Image 1 (tube, rainbow, N blue to C red):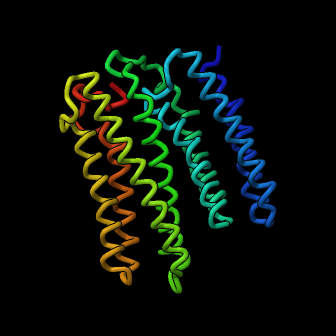
Image 2 (tube, helix red, strand yellow):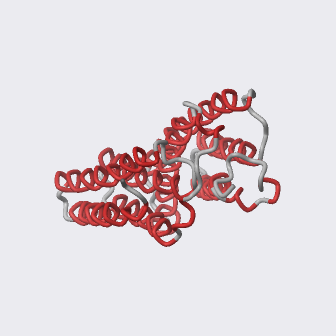
Length: 262
């Protein structure tokens, strides 16, 4: 049976394949970049599936398990951006970020012991978390693009570059919206109500409105690029608060199903 002790044997070859894909992308070999990056994703997803079968539940309960999905979706989002806009750096950045989350999981094994509580056995729970993790990955890729434009490109930002950022936000916010809808259906199935304004739900609403504000600002003031990109960084900080920061809020301790340490 697969357990977290086997994670390194899947994560290491996956990271090496992602690194190889990022390297050959810089060498203008897109076909090889696609093959190696997808191969790494398949190796990594094989562990997710094996762990799913071993646990007899989707690996979505603990913070470590959600980081597992984020580590998978980051290179996925990077590959999507590379496929559409051929930005060579995105594969390297997404792979490095995925490596960070993988290392956290390797060095904090105590986060994997939590069993799935009855409320989380709803059929809506798995799509809720999976869709949210994909949204987070897309919004993370948009944040990388914003950082690049703000601190590396700085001047002569093109409309194509802004279009990449905007499109990632559009798609990411769409997936976040679906994730919130699935979450509402899960809450109705588990607790009998769609929304309860617990800390996680409150911060989810704040994050959703933050990204919506970015879209409206970009549409209303298309020439004010730097304030929009800076706001995007603020929105990503709010996203981190929604994802894991609420675990440290006193109001969430022992009262919210969304605190992965409880």
